[in-house]
Image (tube, rainbow, N blue to C red; front, side, top):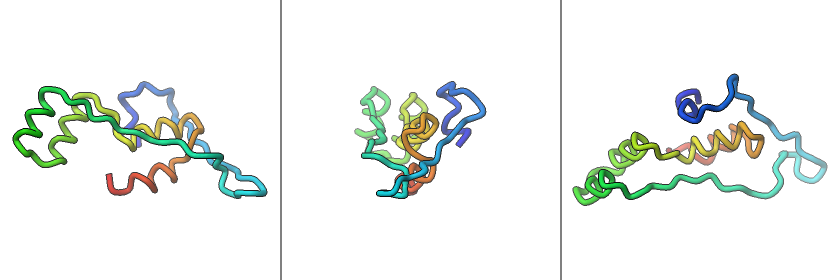
Length: 95
């Protein structure tokens, strides 16, 4: 997780939260919140797409250009107590 969060200058040591739940849910979640990843169409990304380069290569270029991944966005939200690390990992397993 250190690698995913290092570019965001979050206070260390990272503090993550775990929901205690209530009589109704026993999970500690109230409502839903999204985690997001936005791919900006830069000249480099456009060039790679036009060349039909693999998605993995386009993704690597996007991250190199500063894109925040879904996993990173989720982990940032986990440090704020909005969600848990376990939930972030559950929904980003294939990333």
